[in-house]
Length: 91
Image (cartoon, rainbow, N blue to C red; front, side, top):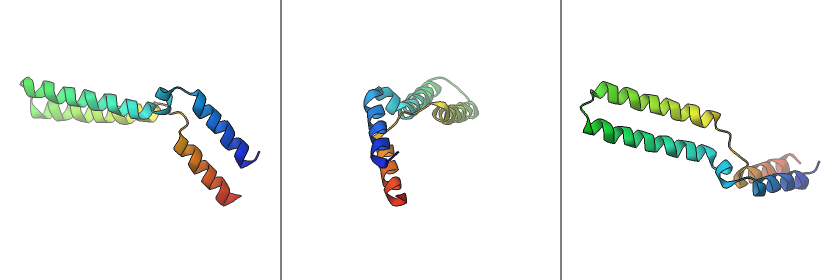
């Protein structure tokens, strides 16, 4: 299979996938950032020991990393461009 046909297949997949799939990891990280901000606002308004505040923020950070790790991203235009460049160098 030549480089153009592979790129064509990937570009067709890119066009067919929903926008949410393309940016799934970004959306996961953004949601967890909102959770972290909400926790900070809540912990400032309630008398929570600083160790608990820090511990929960660490847990949110770990949950973000795990969420990004296990959230499948779709195909992106940047990936296709990188694959094409790689194939040209190898070709």
